[in-house]
Length: 313
Image (cartoon, rainbow, N blue to C red):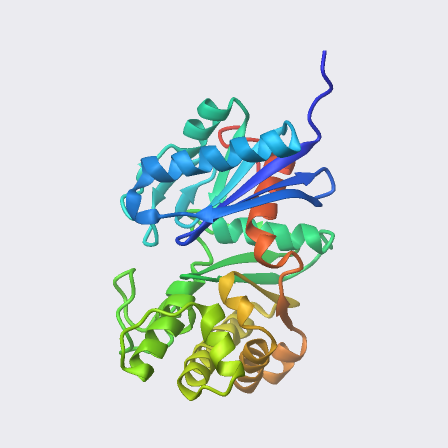
């Protein structure tokens, strides 16, 4: 009889990128693989890609005891079903945990992607008792996770911390959620790219990495788009600090690739707007596992709480 696997897999299914990792029992990343989500192809094709990434990781890293998935949408973590998503089209009541468990013959847990990132950061910090933590995933859109007294806070319906949908500018741009002036529309990667295209006047889509290079070279529209997104995120973080009074606000997602100037501008705006006593108690920094936080957190949720349908956090 073969020894039981002592590794877990995490998949982070975002609107743009699908990231898979294999982690050891202590959460250290042993292998990773990234591909495009190609979300417009619909659920069946995205699930095929999740399966392909998982199979490739098992081939390179060996068997795993379980798989955790962080998905960019509203998720019933108890059943592992995706209720809906404003970021990925056509996902409505999709039994993602059951589908992947059946295909891969391994227990599967499905969570919201930002919740997974929040748990990943909690684990990376060593799960300190009494920690008050807010995590924002800043990518194509913006998600959030809240930890209160060292425990994930899920809310009454399990859909807490949709921080990207808080209103920052009452009459601002229309959001995917149907609201206006949400943090999504002002501070996400999509928002920064849209603002840059407006400033350039050419309608061209530019990645945050390209905009960072242009800004570093002194390009004014790129710099203005990045600074505007950073200030908007700082406003959102100030609101979060005033409401939750956390010890730590941690940021993950593709927009964090904008680097130190962006992070410094986020911090400055948050500190300018939040209550002095509250912001003095809060560290604002990047997640310890960086862009891997969601995938690592998904793996750790599967490790610590077992598959969806089996109870847990």
